[in-house]
Image 1: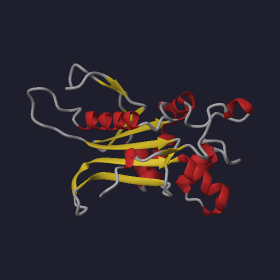
Image 2 (image 1 turned 90 degrees about the vertical axis):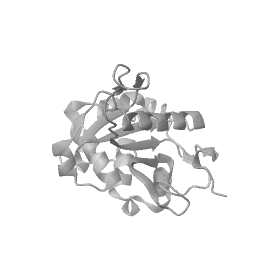
Image 3 (image 1 turned 120 degrees about the horizontal axis):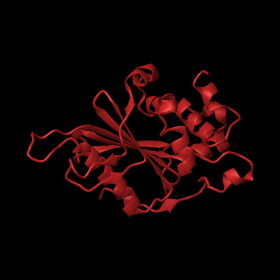
Image 4 (image 1 turned 30 degrees about the vertical axis):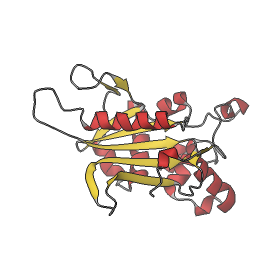
Length: 216
């Protein structure tokens, strides 16, 4: 029987505490304030461009030249579902990228994120008009991991039992910050990918600066 990921028990080992910033260090990216200051900010659009480029392995320059922010609430007047607010929403080449910060690993919270992605997927469908579904990529930055999981990042699509993808217009990425932290502690910085190093910088784990990571 295939296991259901969301039904797995949650582990908070090596997760970040919002109290860490009060010790004199900076607040981790899992803080809502820190996340919005760093990413949901037009003046720092290169930061979210870099994050997306590393997670999806797409050219940073290509993203930076095409990305623009979309309002982060799904309008009740135009769409089927009531207004909902997501953490961050941007568009690149008619594809929507939704970034969610998750400190709560409850099934209801994670299913809520799936519902956000579904709403974005159908967000250009106005009542009485032609069907129009948009490519939706949701990146979940999780301050927890599922017990028994060793992956730093996982990609999910809708598939059948043979592994065939039903549609490529809905994609979910799960990034587990505690696993990145654990890898850093046990294997050292030299064993980290650029994506893993980026999240450590954002969470104040290394002496590096995010501007230096971007090349100035």
